[in-house]
Image (cartoon, rainbow, N blue to C red; front, side):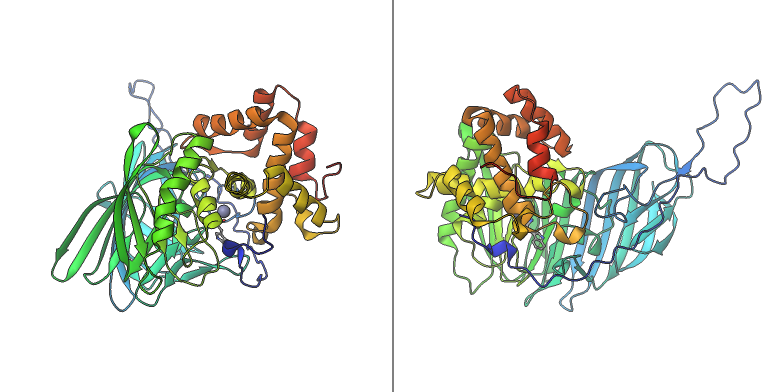
Length: 482
Ligand code: TRP
Ligand code: ZN
C-alpha cells in the first residue's frame, strides 16, 4: 500500500540546508516628509507611505514572500528562444494594504530591464532573490506593476537537493515551481498564502508546444512563432504554476464531470513515451472517484504533462499535473487528489504541508481499497506494524517540521496519511466523509492552517480531538495503542 519509495518520492540525495536569514525588512515609515496639515485644510493628508516587508514569516522559508500588498492577478507574456533564453513581461495587479513607498517581489536570476508602476517608470534594485521596487509615487489601492526582463533562467536547488524552477529539457524547458521555483521564471509574491489568477502567454518556435495551467484561450502562429495563451481563472499559489515548452504530442478531449459539467482536457506527452492512452482514459475515472469523495472538481480544465525530466517526482501543478514519465495509477490518483487538497484548499504556511501530502497519500489508499486492494484499515495496520518505534517514519511529526528539507519526507506523506485513517477510525466513516467534503467546500480557493482542520474535525464529530491530533501531528514518536 505504501511502497517504501513511491515514484514521486524517488529522491535525489539530501543536500545540506543553508537557510540564510534575511533580516526582516521593517515596515518603516518612508523618509518622504509629509506636509503638516494646516488647521484649515479640509481634506485629510494622505496616510504616510510605508515600505513593504521582505518576508511573510513562513516557518520553513523565512526569506520568501513579501508583505504590504495582495496580488490579484499575474499576466505573464514569455518568449522562449531556441538558444534557451527567454524575454518576458510580467504584469502584476495587486492591492496595497497601506500606501507603499516601496515593495518587493521574489525573483532569482534573470536581468530586469524596466519596471513600471501604474504606467510610470519606477526605480528598482536586486537584493538576494528580491526585486525591490520604488515607484515614482507611492502605490495605494489597486496598483499595476509591469516588469520587463530577460535571460537564461536558473534552476533552483531545493533544501532537500531536488531541482525545481526552470529546468532545461532535451527539446525545450519545463518550469516546476514547488516549493519556491516560481521565482526563477517570473517576479512574484512567492508564498502559498497569496493566491492569484493567472494569464500566461508563451511564444515559442512553431515546432514546439507550450503548456501552462488552466484553459487554452488561443493558439496563434505568425513569423514562425506560436503563442499559446492559457488562463487560470481560479486563484492559484505560485508554487502550482507550470510551464512546459518542447516537442510534445498534444491530446485534447472533453471530460464529463458530476452534474453533466464538461471541461476541456489538454494532455502533453513527450514523444517516445507512447500515447499514454491508459492514463488518459484513467484520468476521467479518477476525477469521478475524487468528486464522489471530496465534492465538485474546483477547476475548469484538466489534463497532464508527461515527460521524462528526471527530477524524480510528480507534481500537482494546478489543473494539469506533471509526471516524470508515464505514471502508475496511484501516482495519478495522488496528483488528482491534490487538486482539492493543496491546489484549491492551500496551506498558508509550508509547515502545514501535511494538509497536502497526508491527504493525497490517504487518497491512494482509498482508491486502492475500492479497486481490489486491502481496506484502508488493513493498509494502516500493515504500515503501523512494520514500523517499530525506532523507524524514521515517526520523526519528525508531520505538523512539527523545523527544516525545509523534510517537506517531502515519509513522515509527512505516510504518517500524515496514517493520521487520517486513525481519525476515521476514531470519529467514524460517515463523519470522515462529511469532514473531507466540508473541508474542501468551506475553504475552496482559500488558504488554511492545520488548526482550522482540527477545529472542523471537532465540529463534525462533536468530540474533543486535541490530544488525538497532538499525538498524531506534533509528537515525534510512534502514536501508541493501535
Ligand atoms: N508535491 C509533490 C507530490 O507529492 C512532490 C514533490 C514536489 C517533491 N517537489 C518535490 C518531492 C521535491 C521531492 C522533492 O506530488
Ligand atoms: Zn503529493
